[in-house]
Length: 247
Ligand SMILES: [Zn+2]
Ligand SMILES: [Zn+2]
Image 1 (cartoon, helix red, strand yellow):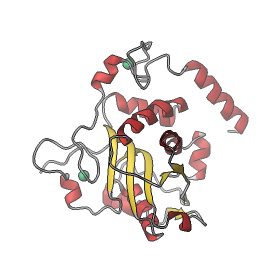
Image 2 (image 1 turned 90 degrees about the horizontal axis):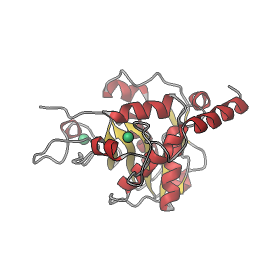
Image 3 (image 1 turned 90 degrees about the vertical axis):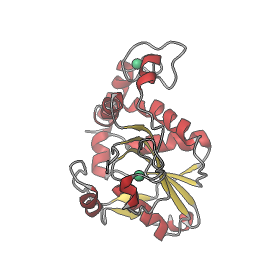
Image 4 (image 1 turned 60 degrees about the vertical axis):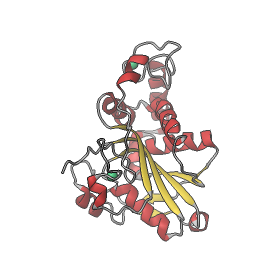
């Protein structure tokens, strides 16, 4: 699609879905009690993560464990990952509309939720970055959803935003793969952007993405940053797609 048509489509979508007027989940008109473009009814059923695993951010059941069953057998390169919501209920269709139905404007309320979460975390990144899309995919979609979220958060907290890596291989979708297959699928897919090495050295980096699934992608990118001398890496996503493994 050429640039003009893509812009026109964005404009028309903004007209159809005017911001701050309707609830992003149910389309009802908002009143003064609404926050982050969400009506009171929808807010009451949002699947907030209230008891996260300290490594991957997944919701875990009450008990003594602070780390989920999966994380006990995995060693992520990042220090911790955090998500606002479980990827369930009304979150799923909203994320689909954001990623696949050109409802680009959703990045603002989504990012507001992520800002609320970030403000509660005890992390102080020097640099915020996002998981890159392959150029081909970004052109198809017209935007990189993770980068829109990351830029919004970086501006709100006055933290430097930088693109740090490129996706150099258009690997198959991760959707149907388990963690091990995903790990292989993301090998040599990302590459550090030339010249950023000196920027990363001894810096704390926050990686932003829309969904945390197995963590294979953010783990791979974290390894690149650590190899380049980053001091530590944390991850923040809008939603977390894995459910607790019972054992
Ligand atoms: Zn609603
Ligand atoms: Zn975990």
